[in-house]
Length: 251
Ligand SMILES: C[S@@+](CC[C@H](N)C(=O)[O-])C[C@H]1O[C@@H](n2cnc3c(N)ncnc32)[C@H](O)[C@@H]1O
Picture 1 (cartoon, rainbow, N blue to C red):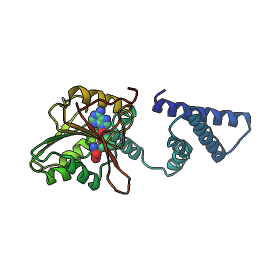
Picture 2: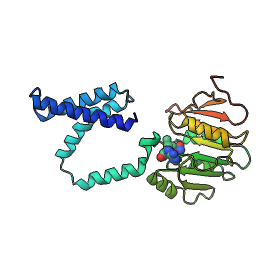
Picture 3: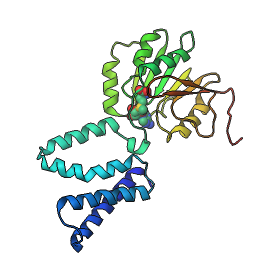
Picture 4: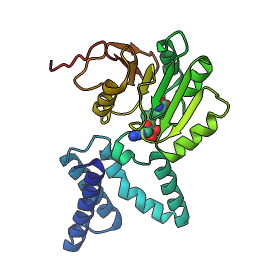
């Protein structure tokens, strides 16, 4: 079951339990019922094997709705907040890739991986261009491409990258362009798309070019090298050299 559907089922189960408790007279009063809804929703989410971080969301969801309702804010604020979140997170409920940005230490480590002469690099799921900005400044001899799907992050990136002549900034799905023209493809995504990323990389990327994954392994394939960036996040860059070998763990 997709995570968003599990969340809906958990919330509805919590609501059904709270209604049943109120009707049977077992529990009365707003906050006891809200608490019961939250506990049942979290319990059902755990039973459905939702990721652990869903549990505090279920525990806090209805209590926050009730508190927000009490604040009597104009409904336009909620609509506005919803629209902003949609524009930033876009299809992350489907892709299961959230937005978080590479830091400067990671950009410096990636800069070390670029070949000495002019090279081309692609950031798949480029966010706001947080990685490409420092790289484009550090390596004016190289050409960088970022492709981003979410409209708001893409638009922010476009603004921030104005004046960076060596950056091409595209809006679209990371699986659409051909990756064969790049010496380095950088992925900071999530575990979910990594098998598809590997399938595309191993089909299209040239021998000797490099796929660099920030944090997430390609299942069944051992990285050729792992770089510890040494930042506070504990960033690890996993390097997969294309065409040299395809070392599956399962043989
Ligand atoms: C973890 S962020 C990384 C941002 C940037 N690469 C960085 O390192 O700072 C992942 C980004 O990938 C984008 N994304 C997820 N799936 C995508 C897809 N199929 N096509 C293009 N972008 C995608 C998300 O919108 C998000 O901005």
